[in-house]
Length: 237
Ligand SMILES: Nc1ncnc2c1ncn2[C@@H]1O[C@H](COP(=O)(O)OP(=O)(O)OP(=O)(O)O)[C@@H](O)[C@H]1O
Ligand SMILES: [Mg+2]
Image 1 (cartoon, helix red, strand yellow):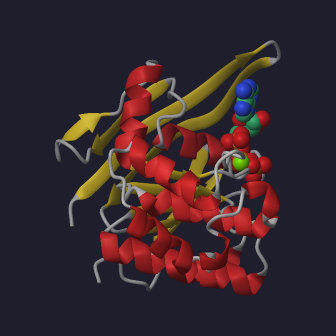
Image 2 (cartoon, protein in one colour):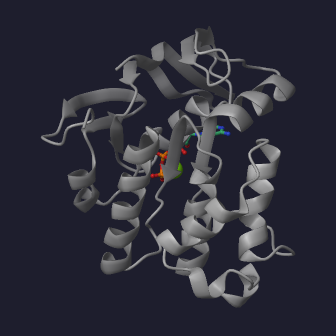
């Protein structure tokens, strides 16, 4: 398997009246295609900041970040400080499940998924329905987000994030609103979708119980990686 992305000495500093906040302070790692990474760390340690830099929602203030993009299959520097270029990088390569799922309220469950596929130029209603079935929502596809529960909305957001077959799938506390049983079901569905389609993933969580789904666990504290270990799960199967 090839390297998908590489961060070298990535910094994300914020200048505030009280001084410089080093949200990321020299983060270096490489991720290989097919890896399933869990990112753990205390509140305020830099997890969301790191996901935002990985997805090109945010621009690092220092260091280098390169990525093997879907269209060219070559390793390129990820765009920063240009919202247009960052948006097109994200559309092409990234799926992101946010902590607060950002569903469009005026679209049905199914339409929310179709829209994302359309934006990525990959409209496929049959696959959209198949993914909603995978997360256990076949009965809700024509309802609006306001007509389903928080956990169900989260599952729509998860189905939506894989609908366009991203190269890299990112999740911030993606099972945070689900009970243990649903959370396990959703994680199993996600792992099997990622394996089938060779999607690489990085999930932030506080839940050590999710480590069993990962091939690698990275721990971060005060903007620095403090440990980085492979689990017994195999990312190449
Ligand atoms: N816009 C900002 N300006 C200044 N400091 C910021 C800003 N955004 C984040 N920070 C700081 O950067 C650090 C990392 O924040 P981040 O949101 O990445 O933490 P986190 O690990 O995701 O925490 P949590 O588990 O609570 O979600 C924190 O100290 C935070 O206060
Ligand atoms: Mg966070």
